[in-house]
Length: 222
Ligand code: C5P
Ligand code: MG
Image 1: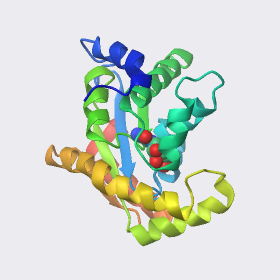
Image 2: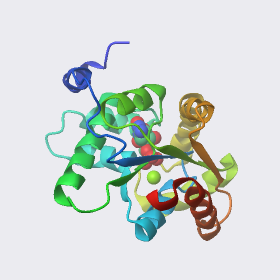
Image 3: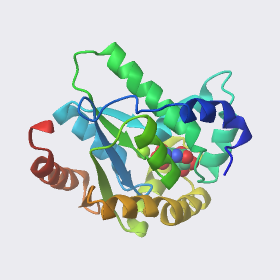
């Protein structure tokens, strides 16, 4: 499929890269997935304070880009977010790559460990990111029933100011998650790269489960 016309420039840049920007022997990337409201951001914040990861939320980066004066992608991002649709991957992959580069440049001695939260949400993002930016070490998948996620999002919507924490957008986000994002989890599951965590319990308990499972797999890389 040809790229969305608004992202042709970014697409061309990504297509001309022979090797990933970062090597997995130098940079550790963990993808953090789960439905909207599963608690990805909450768990990432804890992993940052306990283990010194850098947390990059794809949704936060997209919202910041949407607000950036002069962004050519502002309107496109706004429409996608409101409708719970996936922003063309060229935009998101580029934002993540730029954020990783900036982090490494600003803090050259800090551990190069990244939690990439809410990404990849579609197969094309997964393949492109690993091809041109950095292969991921594993995928943390926070599994939560829809009714619990909906309850959390509606609660968050009272104060979040987010354009998509309302009943109608939430319904669309759930559909996108099932139809478009779960195939990404299934893909990584087949490769044996998924660490699945039950995210129904309160944050403390979910974090204990996260530490236990990650510690077993990553050892001193954690
Ligand atoms: O992860 P978060 O809930 O903050 O994402 C908000 C919205 O940002 C998504 O519903 C989607 O429209 C967009 N998004 C995207 N691609 C991603 C992450 C988020 O298009 N990888
Ligand atoms: Mg989030």
